[in-house]
Length: 202
Image (cartoon, rainbow, N blue to C red; front, side, top):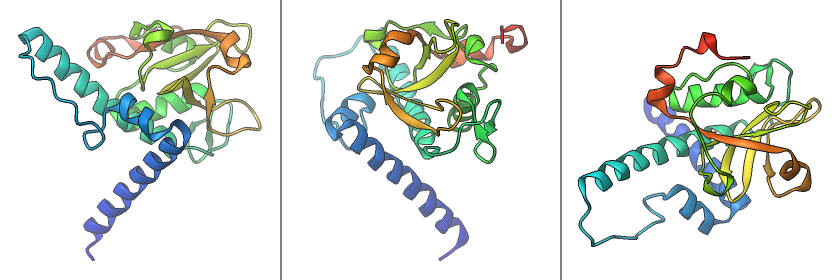
């Protein structure tokens, strides 16, 4: 067995393991709806699409693929300990360090430092229109955007909670989180590329 084949096998095994974990957390049917994995969805639309619809579908498909990578990479960090100011799995993560690391590693997107700064990029998303990969924000320290996580679907998000805990999936319907939810953003890669991150509020 060559080294390259072994590395590819291990990479695919890690992704498969994360998918199984996500399936158990959310339920397989919800995963199919949330991510539209090709092998789980067989819906075909016979109606001819307009050029605008084709462009929108291609854009949505592209983001769905990116979102899959983001969620799978985020889940692979489950169990990593919280550390204030932490930015990598070796030392641990705080909430924004975790989100920033995942987006960079999985989607090659560089988000600004800090939850408040992240709340200023992308587009505002109503809670009822959340999609996997969206950033979700909470008021946990008497500040509107003091905590951030990544929405994974079915009213759940993954985050690095607080000191003494580790990266885990939480339910947004839980009273603690539902009372503290302050908004969501959907990151646009083109917009992010043209944003001067040095001017973002930390």
